[in-house]
Image 1: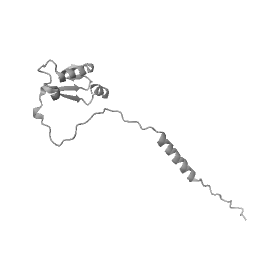
Image 2: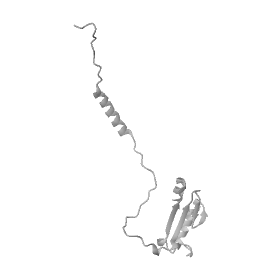
Image 3: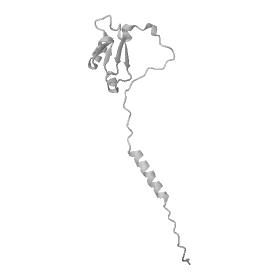
Image 4: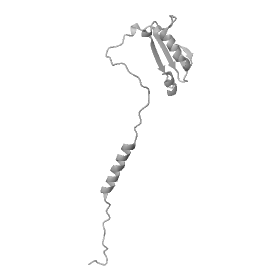
Length: 130
């Protein structure tokens, strides 16, 4: 018999088991349907690690093709202003040296291309030069 002053209290419970199942199914769904994007960047092959110090005393300035990109994205090749579109041809001429000029590399095996960028160089210009 119920007393007049007290109401029967019904417990309001939510079955959490079905919510856990739904959450698990949603998790599996998103894991399966999500595509993982590959990182796109510059793919370069680094030389193997060596503990010995390189012998820089034999470096001949004649064999170094220096490319500098300043903060205004201007290109300096061996100290001369150059356009990016001409860089490939100048590098080929430097490395091959078909006319055996004294200011170009002695041989293709000894040619070194040095790329230097200013901190303010834009990434797009860096990629064009690279």
